[in-house]
Length: 412
Image (cartoon, rainbow, N blue to C red; front, side, top):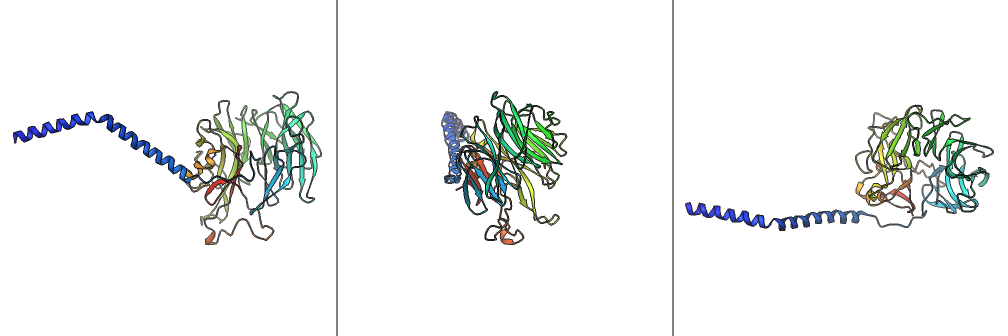
């Protein structure tokens, strides 16, 4: 017994010695295993990445405008404007120059055009009249180059850069017939968005925060808590009520969200995101028996631009209450939680997630097409329960993308 006990202990001690000597080998093997796991993740990401398509609308697409049952979009500095009717694409030429931006008031389509193909030399706003099928009106801003274009309320607003001093900007306001304009140049910065909210028009600027237009003049005094904000975009979260929301970044790229339920006092939410200014509303069909069966605004979509990793590109989501207010002020990745705009975060990250999103739009109900078929199906029918509208996203340099069949890819 004594010898066995001694032998056993001796064997144990020898075993401990061997284990210590093998530590470097074990560490190496563990590293191999961990690397293998990491490689498995990489291989998985590659396996779910879609086969890239060639975008029909290449380069850097413009913002999207929905008017007369069509989605309009073009390529910046291109010579075509494409339109989508819910089933197919067609195009028309730009009216005598390179394309800058698009906007609509719900009746007409407006476009910034650079006749000489040089944005800083000559620029003009042109109007397309659908009843006459022609570009029937235009207006310029003498002494300025027109860089941005928006419609809100009963007016057309443009961001203008002074030709003699590129560090000075102005806001131009026009009637929808483009017959006259007013230039507001009191210590403003580039116009980056315009929305109508609670009977007033709110203008986002890249340095002067949110300014209010009362129908006759643009106030030079920023709205409460937005002074000095470098804003990239602005949106409202509901057809009535809800909020007005603007996004921006400071000089270090730190993003902030400015939001207000009354338009006079803004709250500020600091985030770790860098925003591009792309903003969109994502609707979800409501099957809750306590509420009417209808489409309701469920998410605010926010375009982002990463600084170190491509996985920080794409867009993010904020959940909305049924009244258009934020659910909990948190920002999440597409595919996380419910509601969400995609079925898989991994698929999103492997596709659109590597592209900065410059504009984003969930296709609204475009109404019946030429054949009398509605784009939105009857959601009360069981076979349509999982149907969702397509989403379009304008990317930086990689064309227009779309989300359909549970996958993001270039729209072809």
